[in-house]
Amino acid sequence: MDDGYLDRSSGLVWAKHISAFPAYWDRSGEHLPAGENWRLPTAEELMSLLRPKRVLEDFCAPDLWRTEGKKWLWSADLRTASQAWLVDLEQGAVLAADRTCLFHVLPVRDAD
Image 1 (cartoon, helix red, strand yellow):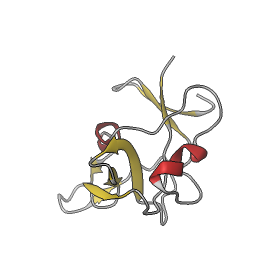
Image 2 (cartoon, helix red, strand yellow; image 1 turned 90 degrees about the vertical axis):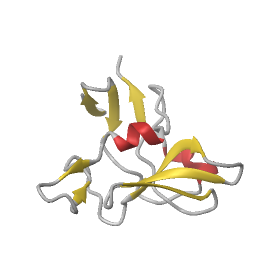
Image 3 (spheres, helix red, strand yellow; image 1 turned 135 degrees about the horizontal axis):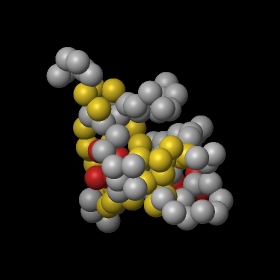
């Protein structure tokens, strides 16, 4: 795929790039590519990207993306009216944060 990476197990296409700059949750949509139904992934979809290395304590993001400084990604899921869920690719954790925090976006869409 020219515009992303197809995950055959989930039927999702992940964008080739994590957003260059972090965003507030309410403005995360500004980091989605135009067209083709790109959206913010759910926390569960983001969790599918977590892959353990050989040692249990050492989790990492897939090698598909350059993630220097871009380890925390917003999900589409809200925890409360003022908090949303995010996934920490480095530690393999799902966390909640205030929607005014600045985190990165990794767009996703359903495969056609």
